[in-house]
Length: 75
Ligand SMILES: [Zn+2]
Ligand SMILES: [Zn+2]
Image (cartoon, rainbow, N blue to C red; front, side, top):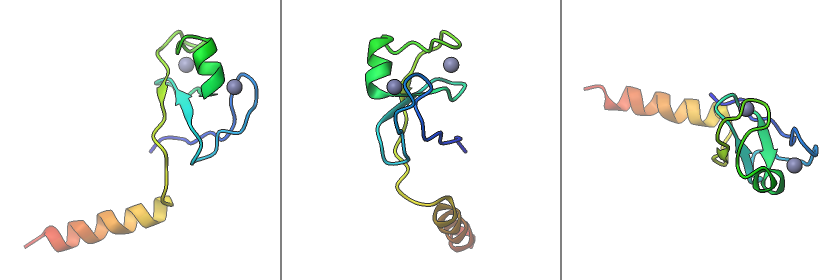
């Protein structure tokens, strides 16, 4: 599971679970404005910054639905 950092590492703007944020493969996290200023390149590792998927459910809700699908899917 991704670690969902809730702050831009550059300007410390809030990047909550439902906010648009950009991350690199090492999960360095930046707000949209900083990512665009840096041409979507991570200043820490030089990697590509991509839009982080929004998380709209709690991990527990998702785990419960994955589990129930697994149980129901077994015949
Ligand atoms: Zn920022
Ligand atoms: Zn990085």
